[in-house]
Structures are given as C-alpha cells and as structure tokens.
Image (cartoon, rainbow, N blue to C red; front, side, top):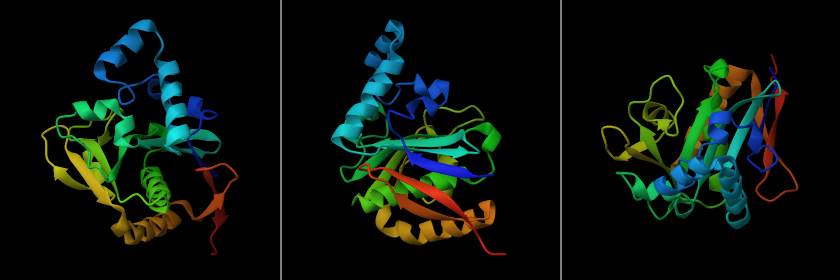
Length: 218
C-alpha cells in the first residue's frame, strides 16, 4: 500500500481524528481548556495554536497517510508553547528539549510500523533544526483506547529513557546526538516492513517536508 508523510499545517489539520481535532489538552491550561469546551470552540483554539506555533517556531507535527487515508500523526512543540506541560507532576521539561505531546496510529493501521516511522520523521526534523533532545510525558498505564499521552512502553521501545519516574506519567527523554544509529536501525526495519526505502524530498515551504516510496530491488 502506498504511503505519504507530510508536515502538519493548517491545510491538513482536519485530517487529524475528530477526537484529536477537538482536543486542546496540551494546547491550553486545564482551566482555559474547560472554558473552550464550554464555549464550544475547541476546534478554533486548536487551529489558533497550530497557526501560532507554525509562525513563531516552525513545523510542529507529522501526518502519515496510507492509501490516501490518514493513518497516524505526531505533534510536538517547545515547552513554552504547551501550557499543560507546566501542570504535569513530572515537569518541568528540560530547557534544551522539545516536547512531544501526542502520537496516535489509527487502529486499522496498527502493526505496520507507522509509530516508528513517525518517530523517525520527528527525529530527522528536530536534528536538522539543531535541537538537542526530545522529551515526552508518557502514559504508564495506557490501554487500548487512544489518549492524549503516548504509551510509555512504546516510547521506551523506540529509544526514550525515563528521566523522572512516576506511577502514571513518567517523563522520558531522547538525546538526539545519539539518535543517528537508532534512525539507521529504524530505516532498516521500515524497509523490511514496507518493502520501501524512505527518501526525503524538500518542498518550497519553510519547515515543510514530504516523502516518497521507492521500491527496493528483489
């Protein structure tokens, strides 16, 4: 099945799952988030947040499509742009790190290696931009239902290390200077999973990037 990955923009924001498109858990403080829901404006708040981060910082997410259908996404931003981070019990996020807020692979595409593919794209983007590390609040008790936090077990499986334990919301970190070997391992795994090699293609927009699929020999 053909696949395509692109940076999150206002043009493809509506490709996010409806639950995430309306969710402002990370984008607003708890108080302001409840107020936005009560006023019926979470979609507008989400759009405003993405617009502001894009203008002031640059690319803040990736969406992958399989066969033209949205299959998964990741969102990340500087901690200063994520009000809820200050309210987490294992905060604050380190000053040299970008915060990975959330990730989801749609259930119908689970087991295809898309989670690792998304993580690889984020590592590539942030390494190119000179970021030293990625941190994330994991969910230690994540179940089958998607949530606003990334399952801690998945994060450990792709190279994150726990730096502040917690029974429910540990904070994990990946040093990007040590991510090159991990990225190469991921690319080899993706070649086996998808039968293709990932080749970056630069587009004209700042912070924009997409990928195309090239069949392997065999």
